[in-house]
Amino acid sequence: MSVKGYMIDVQGTLISDGDKSPIPGSLEALKRLREEGMPFVLVTNNTKQESEAFRTYLQDLGFGFEEGQYLDPLMVLTRRVPPAPVTAYGAPNFLEVLKKEGYTLNSDAPEAVLVAIRPDYTNDDYAGMIEAVLGGAKLIGMHETSLYVKNGRRYPGVGAILKMVAFATGRAYEVVGKPSDAFYAEALERLRRQGMTGGYEAVEMISDDLIGDLAGAKKLGMRTTLVLSGKVASVAEIPPSARAWADRVANDIGVVFGVERRRTA
Image (cartoon, rainbow, N blue to C red):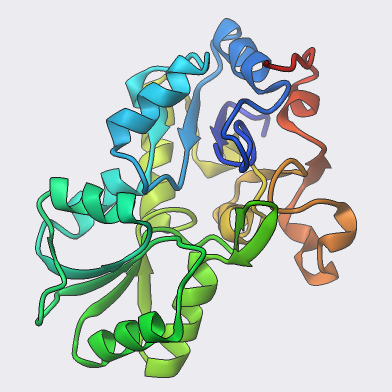
């Protein structure tokens, strides 16, 4: 079946992991999709800003999209885990966002342990996660990224941390962002609201995260494209066992859509 809609990652695919500026060709790629009337939804793992604030930031960069063409884990979290006492781990901005959403942090009896990204986790942090989960709290990842890129270095992503804590406790975990079924189901519904017909087999997912994004998309039946503008620097870094998760590989999203690449100042 031909592609009838796109799910497009943001960090590392549309904007750089470094200075958060548009990756060359990304503005033009979205412009082409709009001009062709092709349904698309931006699927980001943003947790450091409120949904509306990050959506506005992207629009101010020049990315043209409507409110219904954007989805992040915070939008799924509030439906899956309504505001309650929780223990949360992540960047200070993430903790502030949770408080604004009505969650009570650092409870002695948390209903859930929420894990987002941070480059400076310590063994004490991991111990806190383990103790809370063993005490009965649900382990919930804001997403399941494999790697986190910061200042040119690659750190363990939320997915790696979740698997470590799950192994240590013998407990399962849930994910509200990519690549959870709940997140992709919401993204699919947003494509259908734009007029797309069909299911996952009609969707192409474009991302820089082979393990954290594309593996889950592939299992659902989507066509998958890996871009080398973020977490994965070259094809040589892809383990042979994971190569089937990407139907194609491109240097960046501009190459995917064959658009002129314009560098921003």
